[in-house]
Length: 147
Image (cartoon, rainbow, N blue to C red; front, side, top):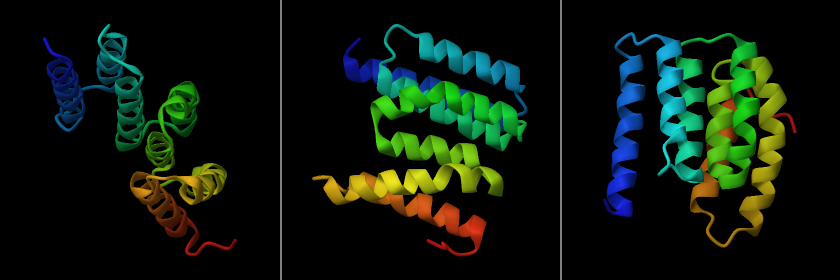
């Protein structure tokens, strides 16, 4: 199978796992399925980062306890930082969800990193979008950014 074919197969498998959350699939099964996808020999760092973001998104969607979401984030953080700032932003936004305390703790340092990256980047598109979404999330939690 070609590289593109493998990527399509893995992406479709992840889509099916995340879709099954909406049909009542238990968290423990979702987490096991994502772990299995991440261990696939054809899964590169980018795909594993995508899986990590999906796990964080599902943990928020299924209202997993804060300490559990933070543990998932801590485990995913090295992988997210290794791949790209947009993946890091997506994972951080998924962690924060609607939790103001987490927003205050995790979003300001991320905004600072994105500020620098957007200013220095040759290709600002994806970084600028991650920056915009992160600021919007913090604004939603604070009511307004206060510096």
